[in-house]
Length: 109
Image (cartoon, rainbow, N blue to C red; front, side, top):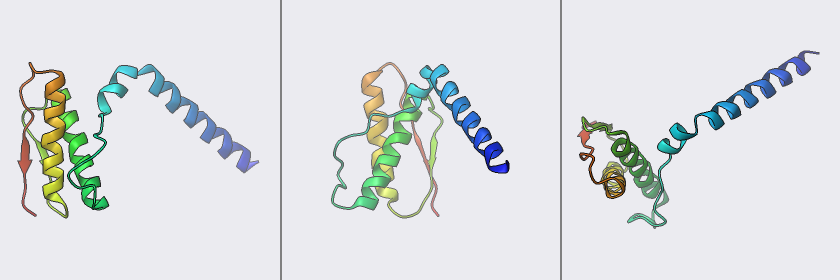
């Protein structure tokens, strides 16, 4: 009985999230970033992941019009994340050249 109840809650939560995802189609698309097929860090998987994370952040910041800055925290592969941010913002800017450039706020940690 308890398992049936939990399964019903899970199914209801899944259907609700699926419906919300379908109804907010414009927002969902604006949060996705077209990732490059290759990066300057293809030989190092962790650096590549950091670059793609930065790319996604830069693309989203540029398309959202965030010109005050996006915080990139320190840590491993910070250089790759910064390069990715710049590349992602440049890619989004190329698609919409009238928007001002997104910037980064660097913090040493």
